[in-house]
Image (cartoon, rainbow, N blue to C red; front, side, top):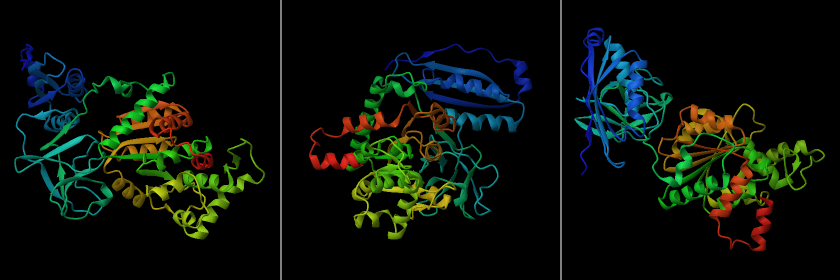
Length: 438
């Protein structure tokens, strides 16, 4: 094995030591140079009012060799030092002498104790009884509790806290594993900036390949869809993907379902003929009449069973047994009986359905994409497809930094996925007619 190259370290600045008497040493290991973790750590120390001394630094000679750094962190007060150390956790810095995590029982239902550890979407462990244990159900903006049933640490949202449950407070005994730079050339596009001026076909094919690998690993493919899928005439592409087993879970709102069902019943979306592209007389009533029809029979599965709905995204979801969660909003007409109108219930159901997802396709829906992105751990690939670059940027800015942004109309994206993933032998007249209907 190649021995990492040591780097000479400077002598301690005595003036800094005098001004910053509160000190703790941390280590950081891995690909800390090419992933820019080391400069990020040093920058954060200074930005938060501390100072540092690199006591030791060994850089791997080859790309596969890990590097190691020992950093002396100093601050003017214990409070500032604690803030710095807590911030450095998300960049992978760990105390030289770790201690067990501190647990405090929750004293208020629906709230964490003061000083609770706030999670990120990165893989996290806590130290209990001298052992490092993985935190389950990783999710950003939660706390870490000891599950009373399994006695294992897990992320828990604030509104689900119950009195007496042990909660991790402070940063001691917590360690985080940052996502290192993607080295595969095949998915290099995933690290690029959002742009509408990039070759789309290559990116679309790479997404299709990522879906193949996800399926081979036995992980779920999640689609988070907006009504523009129907408005742009793309619904039949997504319906085909669902029919052929390329979607296991669908998250959407009332609008996607309502307009997809409108297309099935009337051949329109928002009253516009998807065949002619013209607004039909009284077409503005179609989505309301569609919702009313579905409400009268009790729901979407009942409408499919009764032969009222015979094509489209929702039809294929019912036929294929796709896990479908429709979350409501204050804008909804109706809504459809299948829509969950309690936002906390909808969030909880989406959280549970997100477990086991390997890739998430966020298609033409800004708010739904951001909401679902916040539920997913950092190792889940997120592909955001939208004609508006701001939507893709917002998703990344809200914490879902693993997002792959594709600025494009959704129709060519879904069409290419269908062409790449579905055998060309699917050309029978019956299948073709059903695809044409959606």
